[in-house]
Image 1 (cartoon, each protein chain N blue to C red):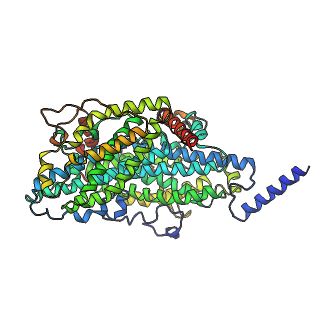
Image 2 (image 1 turned 90 degrees about the horizontal axis):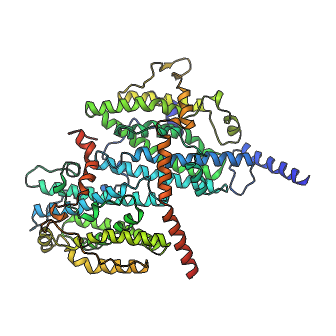
Image 3 (image 1 turned 45 degrees about the vertical axis):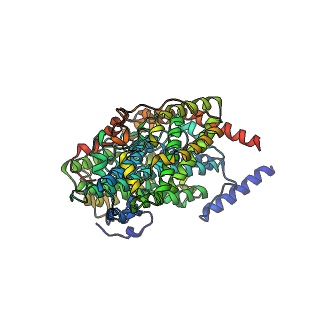
Length: 314
Length: 308
């Protein structure tokens, strides 16, 4: 009886903190479902950073100038760093990195569907920066105000770096559209491939997004999928014009009345297919991560054994 | 571009994208280190120094760093732990930064008489194997065996740190500047490699076996590091270069200490043979370099004259 009352009191305090737009911290009481939702979301975000190293990593060794190689290498290194902060944020909720990595490689937790598309030309490095990091920033900036403190603080740092990456990507595209015909064609071709998958990064339409309202009530999410998608389209169209390239949607048009761009419906069956494991690179990405993790096991075991020996020698 | 209230919205990911800064903004080369010494690349060749020799020497040290960075970059998304992802990429970035300055200096110096200077990219992307001047140790594959990567890095960073320490006093201002920045970087690389050598050597029986095998595999390529080329011999006299033979005792001392603390045995294998007395410094490489260059240069060569 008393326990139930305590629970109600704790729930009440939790709701007051959320209502006052303040932060929940690791030692605060929180509803189990809130904790589960956060673990799932932060882990998925961390996994996305780590899996996201693969498509861009595909071009580091072949980067066409030393300056571009340095920029790309630094960017992919930042993604590993983002993965580290995010796993650390998840660890404040009582899970550990090894357990989450295991869930990733066994397919029990997901990562952003965009990384299941291949990076096929150097223009993809720029387009991933421009569109994919751009969409990620639209999704992530509101998370800097997320109700869970450690996640919100990790996101502030990550968003700053993401925005830098996005500018670097766009600057590569500017250099390429001002270059040779072949370079311009590469940019257009890459944009054609990445445009729709980028729009899908915001998730299914609101009507098919059952978790959105609970996440918004908890202050984990601040805008709906469709709101963020519209904002992304509105920001991107003028940028595409500045590059002199065409976005591959004949339905794209400024709607004076709405004050927004109209655009066509993405192919949601494709998103469903990619999410459920049949995108172009799902199996490859997971197999790569699993191989690297498995091949590193002897190294991690050695480090643990060495640490134990040092401890016992003290 | 349409101007709306959103231009000042913190959630606007695209703010200021359109007024992208120019190539000269150092932040665009963030992490590369190249901006710190850029201004000195065009310094005059010191008095009494042969320009061709100086250019060749900058290529040697620059190619060592470039090719080793390329090998380290192979580890991206393949490391045993995220901390190692960050550390290996960071090491590759440091070396790439050193390579860029050294290649730029080589290109400037070699072209100073003729007015046909090659830039860092012309040197990195448009030379063929025999024109590269790196030592074999830099180009060896490690086949994503972490022990091999650590063994190479331990030897390479110990040797290069000893060279750069002495180059702090070089009469060439660019070599001295690269050394000034590089000693801090290399000290970290050496420390990182030494720590992992201890963990792997004195970790589990399996890691001990693998780390010993890794040290054995790179050891035949250690001898070359201390062989003095004619170019180096002439530049030592001019106060510009280091005689690599002079750093042997120091490097041996460090390696012996690390190996012994890691419970590993210093290999007694014979050094790899030369091609008629010629090695990496003379452009005679292992078969591996061609594959490294095929990958490094493929895209740049597909688009002649393009700038990126």
